[in-house]
Image (cartoon, rainbow over all chains, first blue to last red):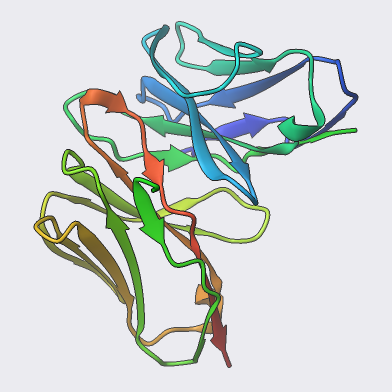
Length: 114
Length: 113
């Protein structure tokens, strides 16, 4: 069974640019969550999508947005990049219903803003 | 105060030792508890998933949850150098709070050959 696939694995962007990251969840999983991981703040929740609807959002500025498609694939967008946005962005896949929060992560996209 | 507290380590042990990793939390609504292992520059790998209080064993790994003390543990028996990684605890309140996971800061473990 294929795992969670994130693309691209690495990105280098310039301040002020925007970036789009992609996540394909495990087949049959309808929930996709996004997390930002930095050495100083650890893993922080960005948002969660279930059946194309955002169900929950973390404490990040509006520059961070996402969406989910009918096939459960999700994209995350960051606009007007800042140096502090450099981080490992992780996508987690779960069933999303029935109370189970068992979540499986992809390998992440490492974003460097210069 | 953070919702989930975890000693960052590093924790250094000799090969074959029993390792004990712990997290404490403040939110009594948490009922789903997870342990992840993360190697450098990789995504977290789910090791253990438990619901409510009790013990769960899987091979060399045992997870314990004590909701009355708001304390969870992961034990690794017969530790191996390949167990050297960062271990993250995570927890969730479940469906009423969506599926948001709250993570500890992670404990770095080094198993010396």
